[in-house]
Amino acid sequence: MNITVLTPDRKIFSGAISSVKVPGTDGEFQVLKNHAPIVSSLDAGYITITTERGEYRFFNEETGALETASEAGRKIRYAIKGGFVEVLNNEVSLLVTGLS
Image (cartoon, rainbow, N blue to C red; front, side, top):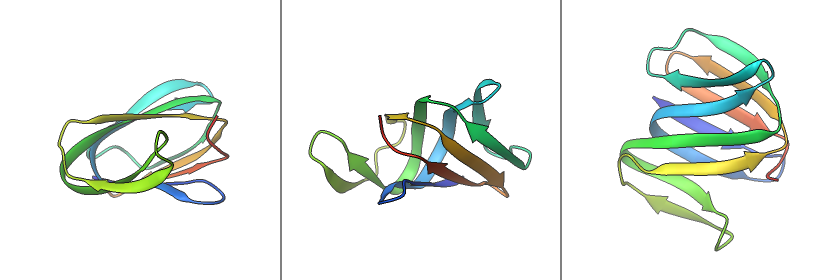
């Protein structure tokens, strides 16, 4: 499964993942491989991405830079102010209004 996480001014994550947890408007939910198609709004909270084997690029909040890695099972967490998620054919798109 692949994901792209975008803010209005940058891409903060793209690559292979095994799961992502998001703060849906009606409560937190997790997306796994072969999830049913969905579009949902997101509230303020945390997104937690668990990486899969393969290359991915992520925004490192400590360094302020986009980095490349390939470590499977790594958990990357971002605080967001809200946004939207779309899941279709093992492709996840997260559009977030900004990092908190």
